[in-house]
Image 1: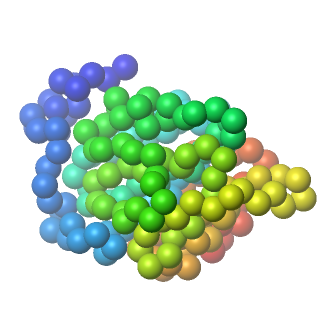
Image 2 (image 1 turned 180 degrees about the vertical axis):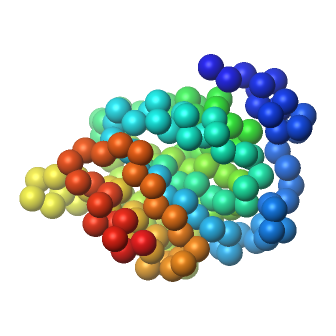
Length: 165
């Protein structure tokens, strides 16, 4: 497991850098990477964050299939892997560059006016599709400033949302 000193060394001794390569750190204007993964995708998420610099100027939103009845430790587990702040999405949060946001259990995420909101999960034909829901919302809200990545999936969740992006 990568420690804070290893991350600091990789990032030139700093835990965070204040500006992105393009100099665009304005909330609401930064690119957003939506990342989807099944419940078994934790290792893939860790590897992804290990490889990402802390100063990319991008906001990352991770949507994983979580146990709806348990408190999530995802933010704490992933926060050890990057110099970027990793937080569970709070209702109405504005996405900031160089931050990682993770979905809370038993919610869907929707982007409106540059902010992310919780919604109760909706099952389609008995199946929960939180990745598709978020990707569609993100594509509608942010247009060309969006990237979608599916690291692992349960069934086809994420496929339809990627088409929208």
